[in-house]
Length: 277
Image 1 (spheres, rainbow, N blue to C red):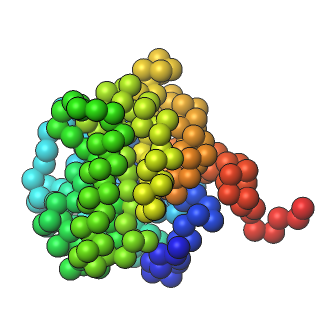
Image 2 (tube, rainbow, N blue to C red; image 1 turned 180 degrees about the vertical axis):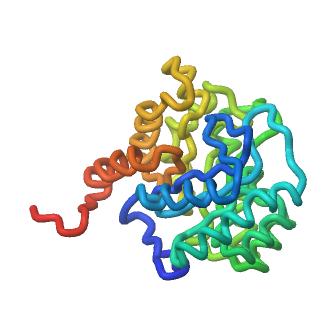
C-alpha cells in the first residue's frame, strides 16, 4: 500500500518512517520548544538532515495542564516556519500538528502535506483536510483518563470510527494514519497497556503511528528527566516496530533512526542501499 506525497511515495510495510518533531512553543513538556522563526526553521532543517522522513511542526503545547492558544497565535508560530522549510526543502514531507481548521488551512497554503490532530478528527477538521487535499493523522485522546473497560478497546473503537468517516468522505485509506495517543487521556498503566497491544491497532488495516518519545510514562519507569529518555524511547520504538507500527514520532531523530534501521532489518527484512550480503 503506497501513499504518494509530493515527489516521494511512502510504501507502507517496507520500512518504518521517522517523523521528526519541531516544536515552535515556549512550553513544550520536554524542553525542546523553539522561540523564533529562523531558529525553528534551522531546527527543522537539522531534523531533516538527521534522517526525518516527515517533519511535524506544531505551535501549541499539548502537555498536561497546557494553556491553549488562539488561532492567530498558533498561525504566527507555525505558518512562517512551514513556509521557510518548504522554500528550502521543496520535496520534504511536512505535517502540521494542529486540531484547528483555520490553522490547518493556513498551513496547507504555506506548504503542509498532512494534518496531525491530537483530538481524533472532528467534522470541521475533516472538511478542511478534504478541501486542502491533505493526508491525516488521527490520534486517540480523552479529557479524563477514565474507561469503562480495557483502554485499548476504547482506543480502537474511536480510531476505527474516525477513520471510517474519513474514508466515507473520500480520503484514501493509505492517507489515513492512526495514532493510539500515548500520554493523552491515559494513565501510565494505560500507556503501558497500549504499548503491549499495538498489534491490535495494526490489525485495523490502516497505516499507524506511535508517539512515545520522551513521554512521562517512560520517565516514571526509568526515573529519568525528558532529555535523558533516549534509551527508554528506543525501547518503545523497538516494541512498536515489532508490532508493525509504520511511523515513529520522535525528538532524537539521529538516535532513533539507528534503532529503526536495526529493527527494520530484522522485522521487515529491510536493507540499506548498496547492501552486499
